[in-house]
Amino acid sequence: MIHSIISVLISLASLQSMPVTTAKTQVPLEKKFDFWVGKWNAVWKNADGTTGRATNEITKILNNKVIRENFQVKDDKNFKGFHGLSFSVYSAASKTWKQTWVDNQGAYLDFHGKFDGDKRIFERKFTGASGKIKGKVIMQRMVFYNIKPNSFDWDWEMSLDEGKTWKLNWRIKYTRAK
Image (cartoon, rainbow, N blue to C red; front, side, top):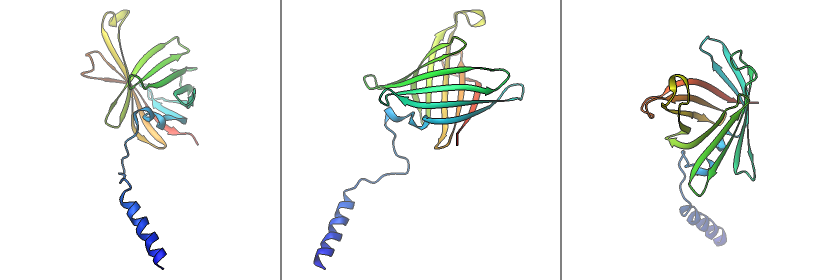
């Protein structure tokens, strides 16, 4: 009997030294994009009212240090056959996220990661090379938000005023594939 009481007291004492966790646990910086890993269905509305659809398979490669994205449009007359890949990596040395995007239209885009509350953002800045944007500083970003275990929203935005205002160019609703 005394042995049982001592066991209970020891158990209770050990509980007091355990840290209290909150409902909103802080995610380590190097894991901020782990929510994205998996197979996703992507759906968006085009300006003409039609619906576009794609799949996006996100995997961790190279000893789980790199996140590989494989985005393929399945149904959209405006983006027919569009296929792109990205590689995202957390640099422990600089404590920053970086992403490189390439696609079958010849794009090569470099982004750096940042965070705004619960939003995960990849952003880039460049100078326009031709047409109406020649010589202008342009910022582009992708914003991941409303992140839940089986869904999130993604916006592709552009700024012509150093990020003071942003114009939405593309909004995608992601749901985890079953």
